[in-house]
Image (tube, rainbow, N blue to C red; front, side, top):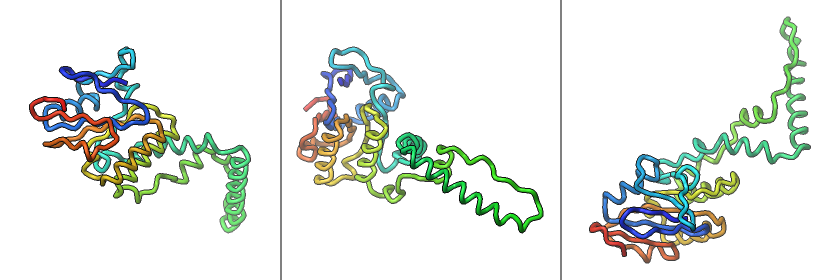
Length: 221
């Protein structure tokens, strides 16, 4: 995929790679973030033949991993639906039987009430999974690397191939964690695009990434 920002050659973002735009220019940082959030059209996406790709189909903005990535808010319902799809038929039957037994036990004790009671139709699987409240473990909310790692794993599970857009990752990850992220993205074969702000180039920190630094004078290094 090509990421085009007027005045600069297209930046390539390839599956299995982390592409980084690091800049000392507040204007460039703002334009990249606003555009990839869908709030202006300064950034254009295109395929290898430079045919346009819409932002909606080509990329997904997630932002700051600690400030704006709420994994359960984003994915709980989708993961619950996915769980229902992958459960084997015998598991569904077993779950339904267990529910009927529970309801029957409740009905057995209803003799204490002088009211005619009966069992309702057992809810379908999707309602049972929703009722369970199953979710991504909340402990991840204080672990920046864990949030990003789980985000990638969720997108793989949901077969979402759009480019992942994050900001300020360097605020949270050590050098070793960033290298672990490089390997994770390579294994997942997804595109990860990072937007960063720095007054100086940090090529060593972003080792093994497709790193681009634009200074405060709009010079690309």
